[in-house]
Picture (cartoon, rainbow, N blue to C red):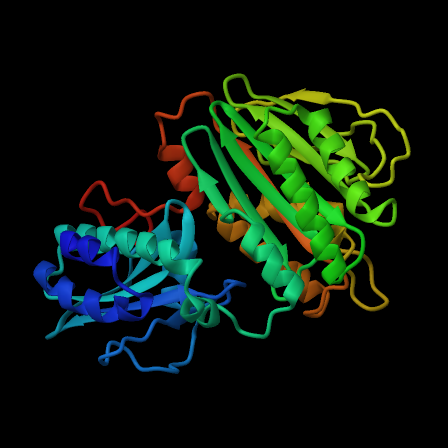
Amino acid sequence: MLAGLLDASHLMPVEALADKTAEEVRAAGFSEVLIYVADLTARGLHLLPGRRGAGAQGEPAIAIDGTAAGRAFQYGDLVPAAPADASGAHWWVPLVDGTERVGVLRVTSRNDDARARQDANRLAALLALIIVGKQESSDTLARLMRNEPMTVAAEMQWNLMPQRTYADGRVVIAASMEPAYEISGDAYEYALDGPLVHLTIFDAMGHDTAAGLCAGLALGACRNARRQGADLISKGEAVEAALIGQYGRERYVTGILATLDTRSGLLAWINRGHLPPILIRDNRWTSHLDCTPAHPMGTDLGLDTTVCRAQLQPGDRIVLFTDGITEARRPGGAEFGRDRFTDFLIRHHADGLPLPETLRRLVHAVLDYHQGRLQDDATVLMCEWLGASSDDTAPAAALTGLPDTTTPSAGRRS
């Protein structure tokens, strides 16, 4: 089954994936497999139709909240889709590429045993890999993953961002941006360079296409400088030079640029006119990582840039965010605020939720607090340091809700 799909995937358009899957899964005793992908805001699961009847075109989306399919997506576990009957067992199986949640499968299996569940999880892993590999070149997938029209600025921003989840034995990283279809001036990035983890968040002035162009320029300049070996101060200077070269002093970007050394847990960062990062320790103690801010990049005010440092402990979480998160407010009401923000992160992490699911619920809570419409971009980038070794991946797997495909089991929660 896996070999047949892998061999076919190289020259297969995504429109043929559902039909080819239906053909190949018979070798593993699966009579039906339907592929559902999550939309951009992770509110619904949408069926990937086939060209020869593998799923009906236009089928309503399945809500993520309050459904069995959604539970598989949220927790990364195989979940029963219906009681077993004459046709076999029915499961919802999470689709995860690395640690990026893609969607779910609905699998009907003639066999209802541990080996069949393991095969279903491995099928899901391969299909997620294929889907993500074809995502950049597929308008079919882009349309399927959208619930509403997207602005030009948001189109540009999403194509610049890395995947929203990354993990290895040393770190777990998760990010979120809202409003997903209208994002413009915010941008985030993380990158791995041997033992170093680079974390960046930007907030460009304004909330329009020009802000998106400004944020994209800042991100490109930062990447370019970093990949040439620039340190934190030099990266900030490279961003400023690029902005002034393009806009004079008419537009600016605030941001945090940070580097975590996973060998020691030493975090170094600079603040270019931005909100300070938050440190969460032992899932109860929080601290704002204050650092004398330099001027926003693009203003050329001549303030010195200070590199600040903090020693992390294993399990510490660093949270970078933009003001759209904390300043969201109901008309005439109080701001969402930092205290409510950090309390939400601590409380939901204590509930045992995977980190990506915590952020999904956070941004939905912010949107709900603001009655569904944000006046500014709201972005969060969170990084948890686990330790120096990349060998022990079990904690990272648990934190990201990664399905267990190594042993014939039904999952941690099923």
